Length: 182
Image (cartoon, rainbow, N blue to C red; front, side):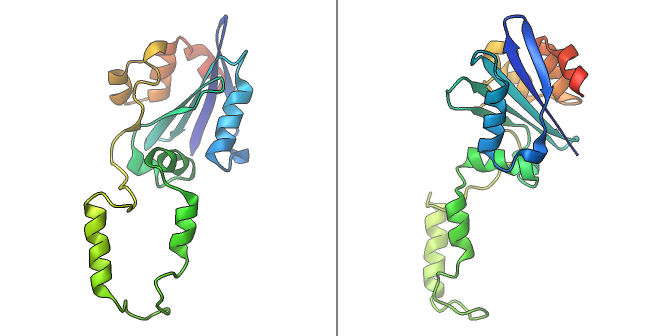
């Protein structure tokens, strides 16, 4: 079960809206949704939480590149919305995933790899910083400083537990508006 909300900064404080994730199929959809909630291109903070497993924060400031933080990348990578964030943060590319699905090694299904030494060389290259997929860390991932200027220090963000979205909202001064959409 997910909870997601958008907090849009205004001259008078924060406005909250429930983020409908059913229409979100990609990270760009999520960013577009956040930008559409902005008041005068001011800051929008999107908060996503999957029960007690992980939470994510996306900050959008006008047309600048979005910034991301995920509390537990390993847990998030196993969920549909969390994997959007972890893939972005780890630099995963859908085109690479499509190529991985293709049989490009020249073997038929069920055939053993004809060139075992080639595979061993690939493994060595990956260990030496080759182009292999980056492992998903078990802890936080992203920019822990994305809310520093809004009152949530990076140290605080990295150590949140219990109800992290409420704690973030408390620090932003947006508790009441967040609770109104919960």
